[in-house]
Image 1: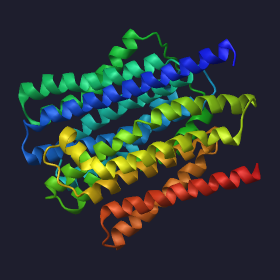
Image 2: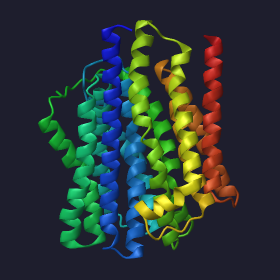
Image 3: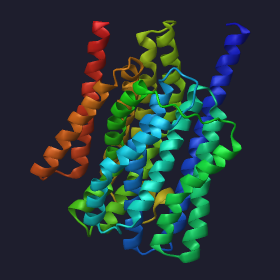
Amino acid sequence: MNLRQLKLITNKNKSLIFIFGALFIEGLLILVSLRLVENYLTPREYSDLTLYYSIISIVSFGLFAGLEQTRQSTNSKQFNIYSSFKFSIISLLFILPFLLYIFQNTGLNNAFIFFAIVYALSYSIQFEIFGFTSFTNKFRSYGYLKIIDGLMKVVFVIALGYSFNSLDSFIIGFSIAPSFALIIFVLKSKIKIKINQNDKEKISSYINLTIQNFICIFYLYGLPITESLKNKDAIFISTDIFFAQAYAQILQFCLAPIQFLYLPKLTKEFSEKSNFSIKKIFEGSLLAMFLASFYLVFSYVIGNDIIKLIFFDGYSLSKQDTFFVSLISVIILLTKTSAFYLIVLRKTKYIAYSLFIGFIFFVIIFNLFNIQTIYMFIMSCTISLVIIFFTNLQLIKND
């Protein structure tokens, strides 16, 4: 190993450590903001807040996380937001009727939809920046935006929530914080935003990856919403499930570093036809499997204790239910890392098909059978993972 290779490995390890650290700090700051609120709201209000947070997470991360993956897999060092922002607006208009349905049938104030859209639009630009900074190895910029975003949530929850001490003020504080984080980052960073209207390949990939991410995020955050739609009075159940999913999100922190490490590199090697191999494609999945196995054992043994200690004192789900929620997070992580091969080959339509088939299965069993919701989620996302796995095998065989 020569000096140049050693330097590259050292820099890569520093990048991963920095990103892990930034994600940990961001997650900790979000947790702090949620815990600060807990003592100032009634159980009903706190349940509504966690429900609202689940909804805006599905909308913002589900619709726009695909922008990060698309940018990482686009072999271009130019940063532009025209097509991203245009499709963000179209996506939000498309999903607006569903938002109205959920808000009306869960008892949330319809006025909060405006703030949900503000929250989502700010993340549409943030995810574009995340993809650009990871592709161009600007890992410090990537991490700084994550930290600023978490910090702004704490600041605005304190500034607005404690000043007016109402559910409305806490929701507004959560919702506008990402926009201010984005403004601060853009003003302080050296990234130049360009407007480019000719990005058809990116748009096609983005649509397919949006289907993938939206359904995956629904599996990660949708349990409290589904339970609330089934039973509007399930206050403590939905709150418990929310914090079980918040705990399960810890595993998803592994996705960004794995994606940061493998996806841009594989895209470059594939486009340049240099050092590209099938073995490298599945290194990310193998790493995810190792982390997931450790996480599942950890969750079953002391998962409930961790949630009660760190997330929510009144947590009351069984050890088995906590394990199943964690299992959903594991399946989603494996699904996303298994999809790297399809992203690199520009065959993202197969990802969309796989996730859509699993989701249709969920809709059918939800409406026709009286099965516990958590089991429906596990079965549906497992179907998608299996389809993606066999699609990968078939494409490898053909190639």
